[in-house]
Length: 330
Image 1: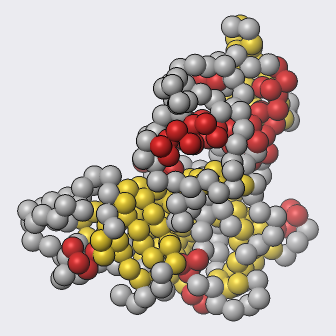
Image 2: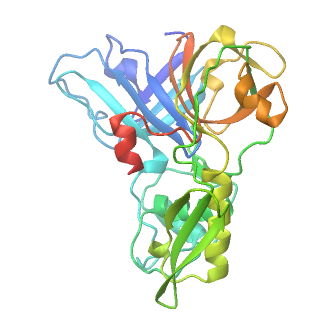
């Protein structure tokens, strides 16, 4: 299987299953970093290895370079189909050293690491999440709130490192003309939002955006009490990162010949990740609105199978279309 390797609980998968396994498939996300992964071990039903347990660390590497990291969630002991989920989606509570709920990111990160969350924070991500809610919540929920108020995206990358970043402003990848056919939609792209929040225990609403456009409700009450100024700032950031721009109907599957680096060489498909910017040529009906011959989009999701010659991409702001997506959006 090329130069790829798969590790489970610190063991090479070929040591656990000498008869091998299917090429792993994994997702990367702009919001979250590593998404999900799946593979099937070639083992008899009912086999046993102590590494094959829920919560075991799953690593996918290319020539030693990390591509995905997560924890094993569903080892099916009859078919040995296995699924893993990225570390950003582990349910770790945001607590301080005494076990009380905290809204301080650095404290919550450090305490989660002390309780076994295998994630590093070398960039020293820190900050206080607006609000006074003392109710226990997950670290993921706390990060979501902080990303809202700062207009950034967060997650855990394949090196097990936290990131908190703004969207890129320059493309990393370029498609060949006509390779991509994204369909645009206004669904879920409200031009104004009505942010409901608590100030001094009293429910209030702040409206931001184009007053002539559709309004989308945003619930900020889970933060507890915040000020009108804080609610306004958070609402502006949500508009900028989640509600502004185009919505998209579909993702696309691209071959190695349809996507290049900015220098013009073939893109290594495994290096294409959610959160990077893609320059798309051949969408004149959309690019015309900007006066350019191309359109720059941030990749919201990728799905790739080791050694495949194609990769699946979705832009951010893709409208829900499958039943699972609609349920998640609801």
